[in-house]
Image (cartoon, rainbow, N blue to C red; front, side, top):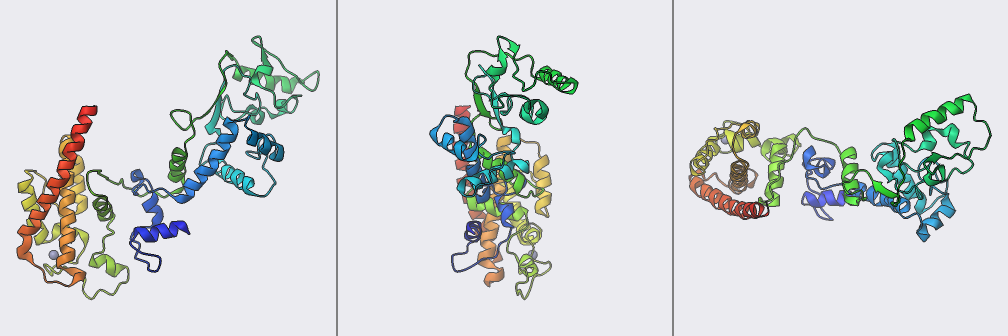
Amino acid sequence: MLEKKCANFFWGGSLDTRKLAWVKWPNVLASQEKGGLGVGSLKSFNLALLLKWRWRMISNPNALWVQFIKSLHGQEGGFGLNVSSSKGIWSKIVGSSNFLHSNEIIPNDSIRYRVGCGSSTRFWKDLWIGNSPLYIRYNRLFRLDNEQDCFISDRFIDSQWSWNWSRAFLGTRNSAYLADMINEITPLDLNSDRDICYWSLSNDGMFSVSDARHIIDARLLPALDTHTQWDKCIPRKVNIFMWRFKLDRLPHRLNLSSRRMDIPLIGCPLCNANMESSDHLFFGCDFAKDIWNLVRVWSESSFPACSTFAHWEVWFNSWQASKERKRRLYVIFAASLWWDMVVSQLLFPIFGLNPLIEKKRSIFDNYRSFSFFWLSIIDVVWRAVVMIG
Ligand SMILES: [Zn+2]
């Protein structure tokens, strides 16, 4: 529901009106690496916030509220295999965490222990070695232990393994299991440090809602086979315009008509020779070609005459130039397309005015002033980077 309101707001709608959504909302939410705008979904945010409760419970075992939860829902608080049968808010928290783990959206082994003195890491139930707790992998032995919640320091005393089995003889099969387990957990080197609980999916070992949200988004949101180019020196609306251009989601006549809007003519109003598509309006039309020639001369760049956006991209990606030069040309390119769009909205299609081709020069002047403005921002940022670097 909230997500729907966000989508409507994004596409320019209000509480009462809805606007045409040009890109599927999950694709808008997806990260820029996956061709989206990196907005992130509210669902993932909520799941990450709920997951934090598991982290808080495990990393603060002595907190009063944790003791309270354990007294109600058992030693594991209902997480993992011992699913809580209770109803209420806590069971929703447990349910969302179990959903993330059972669907491998967040790996089950993301919360782990780094063993120091071994006095607060449970030997069987906490994850301190391998990819799952020992009670899962050596369940037959676990069931024979008299103290299933024992700590590592209870089982490793004076550099020796010390067991507390419920029967005097383990039998051949269990002895073989025990040999396997000892082989896996030896050598163990206890020291005087505190045992530390950490989140293995972050660099600093601390759980972060933002990191968790990104991981959940990466698993749940779709991926387009493209990468979104985003330059911080360019205004946000122009970056979004470039993103829509690349996905061919601009409201030109061909696109509007393919969305069943009543468009009487889908031809280009400038040349009447082609259909009005993004590629034609911004690259292929003679009017656009003339503007690109002016831009090419002014920017002293050698980019070729491109007939489509894809053509430009292929050339740009293979262009051997410094990072700074590439960035500068990209800004000029974006400014050019943006002004083309603004001007074409003012002069032609859907907006009904006559083409004013003789205004080419003034359009070009607008490119120049905007490119200069954005490039001056790049200069400031670039200097800052150099100073920091
Ligand atoms: Zn044309």
